[in-house]
Image 1 (cartoon, rainbow, N blue to C red):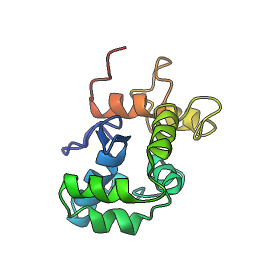
Image 2 (cartoon, rainbow, N blue to C red):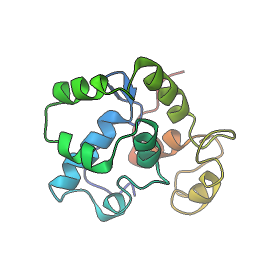
Image 3 (tube, rainbow, N blue to C red):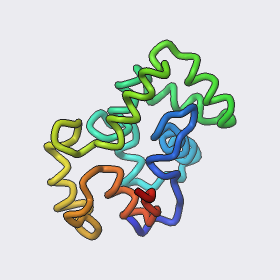
Image 4 (cartoon, rainbow, N blue to C red):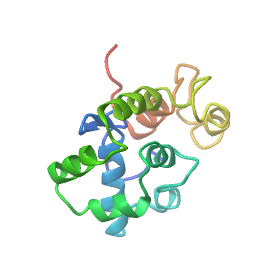
Length: 146
């Protein structure tokens, strides 16, 4: 996966105070332009991936993200913040869940070890405990300082 020549925002980057939103918007823009690599395009918005958990949490659809992706980030932020299912409380809850995806007790915990052993075996060391950490390692994104 790391052989991709495009760059996505970090999973932890925020728009409207929400992690993953800039990343899913960037993926939607690339998808709409036919430039999202097939391994990403085939999973874009899939219910079992981070996109799917994001969309479900905020009661959004892939089509809504695709429709908004053509707008500037400021307009997307306003649209997102105006939605009833995108309150500050919902965003804070998502931000907590998202950075812990893959850990025991959080979504993706059951499948995460399988993904580390197969798709991400080139970067998945024991020190990578979350989905975000593996994505950052795979894409050469500098993890945040603790």
